Structure formats: structure tokens, C-alpha cells
Image (cartoon, rainbow, N blue to C red):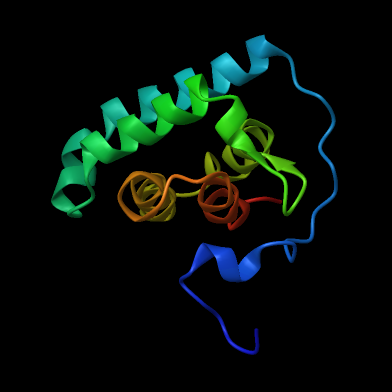
Length: 127
């Protein structure tokens, strides 16, 4: 791959990362709650930015419930772990920056919800 691609599978096996430490179910649930609260607080702005609010909620629910589908074997990543680390970074952004994150969550639903699609989109915010 010599240029950037919108196809998440072009990044299979190429995502560089440090393995996150294990996270507790409580920490994962708190992250989901924080994201949901931010979405609810900023719902009108998200809609005004033409970001599909329903698709965001579907993606969050998918990551929360589909544990098997969260493991990206090509990059050895778990979407729930990447989400926790990404949100720690994203929550410090201003609203415009968080809108980009929300758009990527929506794209998980509308552009491909496979494990690689989940992790590749979230890794853009990984610190």
C-alpha cells in the first residue's frame, strides 16, 4: 500500500500499536456511558453536522455486545480495548474533534462493521 486508502482491509496486519493492558468490564462500561452521555449532550450538533446519530448508537451497541466480532485477528487488536484508549484521547478534544470520532463510529455501521473496520476506524484516535 503506497498511499492512504479508505478500504479498511488495506490496513490488515499493518496497524502499529502497543498492546493495551487489560481493562475491567467496569472501565469498558464507563467508557460506553461517557460516550453515550457526550452524544446525548451534543445530539443536535451531531445531527447538524449530518452525522447519522442512529448509526453511531448501532456501532456502540455492536461493540458492546458482539465480543467475538470485536477481535481483529489480522492486527491482533480488540475493538473494546482500542475504544477505551481512543476515548481517553478523544474526550480531551473540542467538539469539532469529537465530531470526527462520532463520524467514524457511524461509519462502522454504514461502511463496514467487520472487526477490521471497527479497529481501523478507532485506531485513528489511539494514543
